[in-house]
Amino acid sequence: MNFRVGDKVKVVQSGHTYTTYKSMAKYMHLSNWDKHGIPNMNHDFAILAIEDRDAPDEYKLTDSYSKRTVIAGILDLQTGKTYMVGVEGLKLIIIDLLTIEDFEL
Image (cartoon, rainbow, N blue to C red):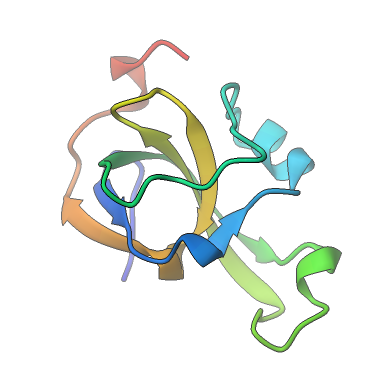
């Protein structure tokens, strides 16, 4: 599945949440990043940023993570918190729901 900035998504596998990748959160400009939180799977989210790159070293330690990963920066539309989730943990609901300018972060 190819996701784009502005797509509306659901989190279907919260185990793909990145909670220790501070440099990526900063790079994605996720100013309200909930680094210790897990996204609520009952909420709707908007994709704010997408990065396709080598996985961080701490995620290469297990076979369950590939060396290459696609990470989405997502905004919880109910709480305003932001998270980073591997796209394999997301499900598309609506394409191009919004643009980043629709939110003040």
